[in-house]
Image 1 (cartoon, one colour):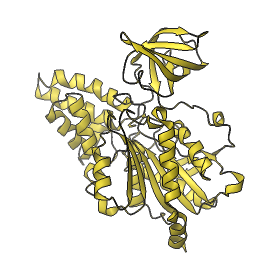
Image 2 (spheres, one colour; image 1 turned 45 degrees about the horizontal axis):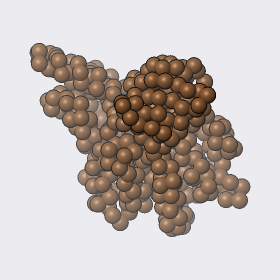
Image 3 (cartoon, rainbow, N blue to C red; image 1 turned 30 degrees about the horizontal axis):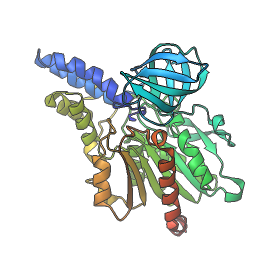
Image 4 (cartoon, one colour; image 1 turned 90 degrees about the vertical axis):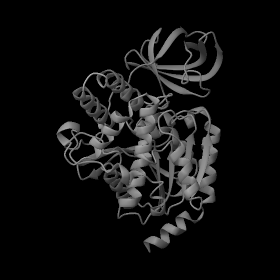
Length: 408
């Protein structure tokens, strides 16, 4: 959620934001009915309101720049093997962390690969799954473009396919809740090496693309229009086979796109990473994780769905959360799909991904992880993540042919 970051770490940025609301709710619900109503409204607004800055819940205990190490308080994020980004100094500094070197006595020692900017010292910090911040870091040709949407021009990055691969196979990356185009930079090399042009899209209210009138997330129900525009852009640039990849809430956006767009003739497959398959299941999971009283959670969901609640939630139109249950709507899906999800996600339960894979074993390839948390599967095990996508692309040899047949 990516909700978002889709950053995650036991809890994503979204989970932590809801956690603040839960703390308020836990106290108010014990006091008055009015307090309960306030708590429902606050939780509902938190779910649909874009967040620009997330809490820094990690603690840097020590920095050894000469030795290339950093010591952090032991948390699920800090102790996970792999490589990550680290925001510090109230988001004014950024560093790249490498492998886990030591774990003992409530602290972990990791490799400090590089301080990109800022003064890294003991204090609060936030571990990020992004790793790359700038497209130029990948060392590949890249262009900044604008995609025309019904709200205006939405910026995007386009990494052309290798010269010997042509440019007719594209992947469109769709980021998650509270995230940005940077989230998809981790995936570019994998698709580029497979011969794909990579388009990293922005969508309404994400801080890059134009805002909607209500400045609220539609949880996929409105954002899909901007991905639909990205599909049209790719087609205009010569795409003949398009894969959509969604991270966290981006998965919900992708699923809305393929069930609502009229421009799917070239879309040949989906890759979903830590996806929201069912919003109600996800919200109830978060509520239970945060020990939010059931009436508050159910009330918040009703507010998001109600026609009359706009003045309370700020939504320009209600969100039909039940139409976003793609386990129940499994029959509406037809495209080959790769789903990657960790069982310890901590934000989006993997139950929806597993249930969808079971219901549509004919089209869904499910690759489980165990300790990769939310949207950090690449960070935790880049080799497994990359191999899963590469092998899925190779096995789906009929994708391009299917697209050509559908568009002819």
